[in-house]
Image (cartoon, rainbow, N blue to C red; front, side, top):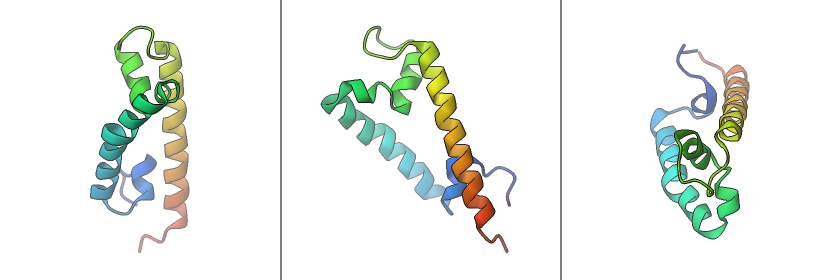
Length: 91
């Protein structure tokens, strides 16, 4: 297994679909959530990142909650990537 493939990227065999999927999520899905269901969008990864960066007060989660939930998301992605990588044949 390549040393740099961890997390969600290990679950997808090619880098391009992984990057495109992340960009689609951040640019389209989270923006649609923000317009339709703003309370849910505040806990999506992009909203949590904006909360940590000091985004608009009152519309985002507190920075501590943002950091904690992003750590949980990262742990879940790492576990999913590890599971996918250990079940795949890397011949």
